Length: 317
Image 1 (spheres, rainbow, N blue to C red):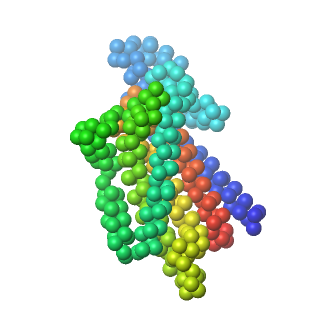
Image 2 (tube, rainbow, N blue to C red; image 1 turned 180 degrees about the vertical axis):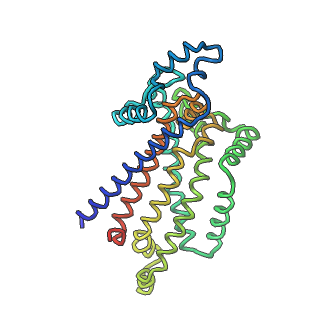
Image 3 (tube, helix red, strand yellow; image 1 turned 90 degrees about the vertical axis):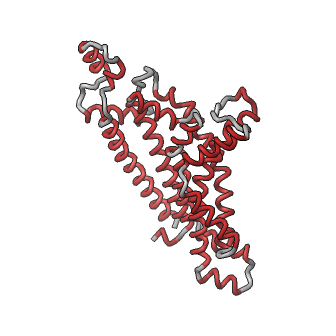
Protein backbone atom coordinates (compact mmCIF):
# COMPACT_ATOMS: atom_id res chain seq x y z
CA UNK A 1 0.00 0.00 0.00
CA UNK A 2 2.81 2.42 0.90
CA UNK A 3 4.59 1.64 -2.36
CA UNK A 4 1.39 2.24 -4.30
CA UNK A 5 0.89 5.63 -2.64
CA UNK A 6 4.53 6.54 -3.31
CA UNK A 7 4.15 5.67 -7.01
CA UNK A 8 0.98 7.76 -7.30
CA UNK A 9 2.63 10.70 -5.56
CA UNK A 10 5.68 10.44 -7.83
CA UNK A 11 3.34 10.34 -10.84
CA UNK A 12 1.62 13.52 -9.65
CA UNK A 13 5.00 15.21 -9.14
CA UNK A 14 6.06 14.15 -12.65
CA UNK A 15 2.86 15.62 -14.10
CA UNK A 16 3.50 18.85 -12.18
CA UNK A 17 7.04 19.14 -13.58
CA UNK A 18 5.86 18.50 -17.16
CA UNK A 19 3.06 21.04 -16.72
CA UNK A 20 5.55 23.61 -15.42
CA UNK A 21 7.73 22.99 -18.47
CA UNK A 22 4.77 23.51 -20.81
CA UNK A 23 3.81 26.66 -18.92
CA UNK A 24 7.37 28.00 -19.33
CA UNK A 25 7.02 27.64 -23.13
CA UNK A 26 3.67 29.44 -23.07
CA UNK A 27 4.95 32.24 -20.81
CA UNK A 28 8.07 32.80 -22.94
CA UNK A 29 6.06 32.79 -26.19
CA UNK A 30 3.39 35.11 -24.77
CA UNK A 31 5.94 37.67 -23.61
CA UNK A 32 7.55 37.68 -27.04
CA UNK A 33 4.19 38.62 -28.56
CA UNK A 34 3.77 41.74 -26.39
CA UNK A 35 3.40 44.83 -28.58
CA UNK A 36 6.25 47.36 -28.92
CA UNK A 37 10.02 47.06 -29.05
CA UNK A 38 11.65 46.83 -25.66
CA UNK A 39 14.87 48.45 -26.89
CA UNK A 40 13.06 51.45 -28.35
CA UNK A 41 11.02 51.77 -25.14
CA UNK A 42 14.19 51.75 -23.03
CA UNK A 43 16.13 54.20 -25.20
CA UNK A 44 13.24 56.47 -26.15
CA UNK A 45 12.20 57.90 -29.48
CA UNK A 46 15.38 59.98 -29.79
CA UNK A 47 17.62 56.90 -29.90
CA UNK A 48 19.83 56.50 -32.95
CA UNK A 49 19.66 53.31 -35.04
CA UNK A 50 23.23 52.51 -33.97
CA UNK A 51 22.31 52.75 -30.29
CA UNK A 52 19.24 50.57 -30.83
CA UNK A 53 21.26 47.96 -32.70
CA UNK A 54 24.02 47.99 -30.08
CA UNK A 55 21.64 47.52 -27.14
CA UNK A 56 19.74 44.81 -29.01
CA UNK A 57 23.01 42.94 -29.53
CA UNK A 58 24.04 43.46 -25.89
CA UNK A 59 20.70 42.05 -24.70
CA UNK A 60 21.02 39.03 -27.05
CA UNK A 61 17.73 39.94 -28.70
CA UNK A 62 19.15 39.08 -32.12
CA UNK A 63 19.47 35.40 -31.15
CA UNK A 64 16.74 33.03 -32.40
CA UNK A 65 13.80 32.67 -30.01
CA UNK A 66 14.58 29.00 -29.28
CA UNK A 67 18.14 29.91 -28.22
CA UNK A 68 16.85 32.66 -25.90
CA UNK A 69 14.27 30.28 -24.44
CA UNK A 70 16.85 27.59 -23.70
CA UNK A 71 19.18 30.13 -22.06
CA UNK A 72 16.30 31.55 -20.00
CA UNK A 73 15.10 28.09 -18.92
CA UNK A 74 18.64 26.99 -18.01
CA UNK A 75 19.06 30.10 -15.89
CA UNK A 76 15.67 29.53 -14.28
CA UNK A 77 16.60 25.97 -13.30
CA UNK A 78 19.82 27.25 -11.72
CA UNK A 79 17.94 29.95 -9.80
CA UNK A 80 19.05 32.80 -12.06
CA UNK A 81 15.98 34.89 -12.95
CA UNK A 82 17.95 37.23 -15.17
CA UNK A 83 18.42 41.00 -15.15
CA UNK A 84 15.60 43.52 -15.25
CA UNK A 85 15.56 45.57 -18.47
CA UNK A 86 14.02 48.63 -16.84
CA UNK A 87 16.06 48.73 -13.61
CA UNK A 88 19.25 46.94 -14.69
CA UNK A 89 19.10 44.95 -11.45
CA UNK A 90 18.92 41.27 -10.65
CA UNK A 91 15.26 40.23 -10.95
CA UNK A 92 15.38 38.30 -7.69
CA UNK A 93 16.49 41.45 -5.82
CA UNK A 94 13.46 43.27 -7.21
CA UNK A 95 10.89 40.64 -6.28
CA UNK A 96 12.43 39.21 -3.11
CA UNK A 97 10.80 41.59 -0.62
CA UNK A 98 7.64 41.93 -2.75
CA UNK A 99 7.19 38.15 -2.84
CA UNK A 100 7.56 38.06 0.94
CA UNK A 101 4.82 40.71 1.25
CA UNK A 102 2.48 38.75 -1.01
CA UNK A 103 3.14 35.51 0.88
CA UNK A 104 2.53 37.32 4.17
CA UNK A 105 -0.79 38.67 2.89
CA UNK A 106 -1.73 35.22 1.55
CA UNK A 107 -0.70 33.56 4.82
CA UNK A 108 -2.81 35.89 6.97
CA UNK A 109 -5.79 35.46 4.68
CA UNK A 110 -5.39 31.67 4.65
CA UNK A 111 -5.11 31.48 8.44
CA UNK A 112 -8.48 33.20 8.73
CA UNK A 113 -10.23 31.85 5.62
CA UNK A 114 -9.66 28.10 6.11
CA UNK A 115 -11.18 27.65 9.60
CA UNK A 116 -13.88 30.21 8.82
CA UNK A 117 -14.89 28.46 5.58
CA UNK A 118 -14.71 24.96 7.06
CA UNK A 119 -16.93 25.94 9.97
CA UNK A 120 -19.58 27.65 7.86
CA UNK A 121 -19.48 24.96 5.14
CA UNK A 122 -19.91 22.12 7.62
CA UNK A 123 -22.67 23.95 9.54
CA UNK A 124 -24.56 24.63 6.30
CA UNK A 125 -24.23 20.97 5.28
CA UNK A 126 -25.22 19.50 8.64
CA UNK A 127 -28.22 21.82 8.94
CA UNK A 128 -29.13 21.62 5.26
CA UNK A 129 -32.37 23.45 4.51
CA UNK A 130 -32.39 25.28 7.85
CA UNK A 131 -32.23 29.05 8.40
CA UNK A 132 -28.44 28.81 8.86
CA UNK A 133 -28.05 27.03 5.53
CA UNK A 134 -30.27 29.53 3.72
CA UNK A 135 -28.39 32.52 5.16
CA UNK A 136 -24.98 31.01 4.25
CA UNK A 137 -26.08 29.93 0.76
CA UNK A 138 -27.74 33.27 -0.03
CA UNK A 139 -24.68 35.18 1.20
CA UNK A 140 -22.36 33.05 -0.94
CA UNK A 141 -24.46 33.55 -4.07
CA UNK A 142 -24.51 37.30 -3.42
CA UNK A 143 -20.76 37.48 -2.84
CA UNK A 144 -19.63 35.41 -5.84
CA UNK A 145 -21.64 37.69 -8.12
CA UNK A 146 -19.59 40.72 -7.00
CA UNK A 147 -16.11 41.31 -8.37
CA UNK A 148 -13.15 41.82 -6.03
CA UNK A 149 -12.73 45.31 -7.44
CA UNK A 150 -16.23 46.25 -6.24
CA UNK A 151 -15.59 44.69 -2.84
CA UNK A 152 -12.27 46.54 -2.48
CA UNK A 153 -13.76 49.84 -3.65
CA UNK A 154 -16.74 49.49 -1.31
CA UNK A 155 -14.48 48.67 1.65
CA UNK A 156 -12.34 51.69 0.87
CA UNK A 157 -15.40 53.94 0.60
CA UNK A 158 -16.83 52.76 3.94
CA UNK A 159 -13.77 52.30 6.15
CA UNK A 160 -11.44 54.89 4.67
CA UNK A 161 -13.60 57.69 3.28
CA UNK A 162 -16.74 57.64 5.46
CA UNK A 163 -15.55 56.22 8.78
CA UNK A 164 -11.86 57.17 8.40
CA UNK A 165 -10.86 54.09 10.40
CA UNK A 166 -8.39 52.58 7.94
CA UNK A 167 -5.83 54.02 5.49
CA UNK A 168 -6.69 53.74 1.80
CA UNK A 169 -3.07 52.83 1.02
CA UNK A 170 -1.63 49.69 2.62
CA UNK A 171 1.78 51.03 3.59
CA UNK A 172 3.53 47.98 5.05
CA UNK A 173 6.45 48.97 7.23
CA UNK A 174 7.72 47.52 10.50
CA UNK A 175 8.27 51.07 11.77
CA UNK A 176 4.52 51.75 11.98
CA UNK A 177 4.07 49.27 14.84
CA UNK A 178 1.48 46.57 15.41
CA UNK A 179 -1.48 48.96 15.25
CA UNK A 180 -0.29 50.38 11.94
CA UNK A 181 0.35 46.90 10.56
CA UNK A 182 -3.15 45.76 11.49
CA UNK A 183 -4.67 48.79 9.81
CA UNK A 184 -2.52 48.30 6.70
CA UNK A 185 -3.53 44.66 6.26
CA UNK A 186 -7.18 45.07 7.29
CA UNK A 187 -8.81 45.97 3.97
CA UNK A 188 -6.65 43.79 1.65
CA UNK A 189 -7.21 40.78 3.92
CA UNK A 190 -10.90 41.58 4.23
CA UNK A 191 -11.32 41.75 0.45
CA UNK A 192 -9.41 38.54 -0.25
CA UNK A 193 -11.18 36.77 2.60
CA UNK A 194 -14.59 37.56 1.15
CA UNK A 195 -13.53 36.42 -2.33
CA UNK A 196 -11.83 33.11 -1.45
CA UNK A 197 -14.12 32.10 1.41
CA UNK A 198 -17.25 32.06 -0.73
CA UNK A 199 -15.89 29.36 -3.03
CA UNK A 200 -14.41 27.31 -0.16
CA UNK A 201 -17.67 27.39 1.82
CA UNK A 202 -19.68 26.32 -1.21
CA UNK A 203 -17.39 23.38 -2.03
CA UNK A 204 -17.09 22.29 1.61
CA UNK A 205 -20.87 22.30 1.97
CA UNK A 206 -21.31 20.24 -1.21
CA UNK A 207 -18.62 17.70 -0.23
CA UNK A 208 -19.99 17.17 3.29
CA UNK A 209 -23.59 16.85 2.03
CA UNK A 210 -22.43 14.19 -0.44
CA UNK A 211 -20.62 12.31 2.33
CA UNK A 212 -23.63 12.50 4.64
CA UNK A 213 -25.70 10.65 2.02
CA UNK A 214 -23.42 7.60 2.13
CA UNK A 215 -24.92 4.38 3.60
CA UNK A 216 -22.22 3.97 6.25
CA UNK A 217 -23.01 7.45 7.61
CA UNK A 218 -26.72 6.64 7.80
CA UNK A 219 -25.83 3.33 9.50
CA UNK A 220 -23.76 5.18 12.10
CA UNK A 221 -26.70 7.49 12.74
CA UNK A 222 -29.05 4.52 13.16
CA UNK A 223 -26.64 2.98 15.67
CA UNK A 224 -26.96 6.06 17.83
CA UNK A 225 -23.92 8.10 16.87
CA UNK A 226 -24.24 11.75 17.76
CA UNK A 227 -24.40 14.36 15.03
CA UNK A 228 -20.96 15.73 15.86
CA UNK A 229 -19.39 12.23 15.88
CA UNK A 230 -21.11 11.39 12.61
CA UNK A 231 -19.60 14.48 10.96
CA UNK A 232 -16.11 14.37 12.51
CA UNK A 233 -15.47 10.60 12.39
CA UNK A 234 -17.46 9.52 9.32
CA UNK A 235 -18.32 12.34 6.92
CA UNK A 236 -15.28 14.63 7.13
CA UNK A 237 -12.52 12.01 6.52
CA UNK A 238 -14.23 11.04 3.26
CA UNK A 239 -14.65 14.67 2.23
CA UNK A 240 -10.99 15.59 2.69
CA UNK A 241 -10.11 15.11 -0.99
CA UNK A 242 -12.78 17.40 -2.50
CA UNK A 243 -12.34 19.96 0.28
CA UNK A 244 -8.54 20.01 -0.18
CA UNK A 245 -8.94 20.53 -3.93
CA UNK A 246 -11.46 23.32 -3.41
CA UNK A 247 -9.18 25.05 -0.93
CA UNK A 248 -6.14 24.66 -3.17
CA UNK A 249 -7.99 26.25 -6.07
CA UNK A 250 -9.23 29.10 -3.90
CA UNK A 251 -5.88 29.73 -2.21
CA UNK A 252 -4.02 29.70 -5.53
CA UNK A 253 -5.99 32.85 -6.29
CA UNK A 254 -4.16 34.59 -3.46
CA UNK A 255 -0.88 34.45 -5.42
CA UNK A 256 -1.86 35.34 -8.96
CA UNK A 257 -5.33 36.73 -8.60
CA UNK A 258 -4.45 39.34 -5.99
CA UNK A 259 -3.42 41.77 -8.72
CA UNK A 260 -6.57 43.87 -8.34
CA UNK A 261 -6.34 43.98 -4.55
CA UNK A 262 -2.65 44.96 -4.58
CA UNK A 263 -3.31 47.60 -7.23
CA UNK A 264 -6.37 49.13 -5.53
CA UNK A 265 -4.69 49.37 -2.12
CA UNK A 266 -1.18 50.06 -3.50
CA UNK A 267 0.00 47.04 -1.55
CA UNK A 268 3.71 46.37 -2.29
CA UNK A 269 3.32 42.78 -3.47
CA UNK A 270 4.62 40.78 -6.42
CA UNK A 271 1.38 41.15 -8.39
CA UNK A 272 1.82 44.93 -8.46
CA UNK A 273 5.44 44.44 -9.58
CA UNK A 274 4.19 42.37 -12.50
CA UNK A 275 1.65 45.03 -13.49
CA UNK A 276 4.40 47.67 -13.46
CA UNK A 277 6.70 45.33 -15.46
CA UNK A 278 4.06 44.92 -18.17
CA UNK A 279 3.83 48.71 -18.48
CA UNK A 280 7.60 48.98 -19.05
CA UNK A 281 7.77 45.74 -21.10
CA UNK A 282 10.35 44.34 -18.68
CA UNK A 283 10.32 40.79 -20.05
CA UNK A 284 12.62 39.04 -17.51
CA UNK A 285 10.54 40.47 -14.65
CA UNK A 286 7.23 39.52 -16.28
CA UNK A 287 8.44 35.98 -17.03
CA UNK A 288 9.76 35.47 -13.50
CA UNK A 289 6.54 36.70 -11.86
CA UNK A 290 4.42 34.52 -14.16
CA UNK A 291 6.51 31.43 -13.40
CA UNK A 292 6.31 32.09 -9.65
CA UNK A 293 2.52 32.33 -9.89
CA UNK A 294 2.35 29.10 -11.90
CA UNK A 295 4.71 27.31 -9.52
CA UNK A 296 2.59 28.37 -6.55
CA UNK A 297 -0.59 27.21 -8.28
CA UNK A 298 0.89 23.82 -9.22
CA UNK A 299 2.35 23.38 -5.74
CA UNK A 300 -1.06 23.89 -4.11
CA UNK A 301 -2.87 21.66 -6.61
CA UNK A 302 -0.25 18.90 -6.24
CA UNK A 303 -0.49 19.09 -2.43
CA UNK A 304 -4.28 18.77 -2.69
CA UNK A 305 -3.92 15.75 -5.00
CA UNK A 306 -1.50 14.08 -2.59
CA UNK A 307 -3.85 14.70 0.35
CA UNK A 308 -6.75 13.27 -1.65
CA UNK A 309 -4.73 10.15 -2.59
CA UNK A 310 -3.71 9.53 1.00
CA UNK A 311 -7.21 10.18 2.37
CA UNK A 312 -9.31 8.34 -0.22
CA UNK A 313 -8.51 4.67 -1.01
CA UNK A 314 -10.69 4.78 -4.15
CA UNK A 315 -8.21 7.17 -5.81
CA UNK A 316 -5.43 4.58 -5.47
CA UNK A 317 -7.11 2.13 -7.85
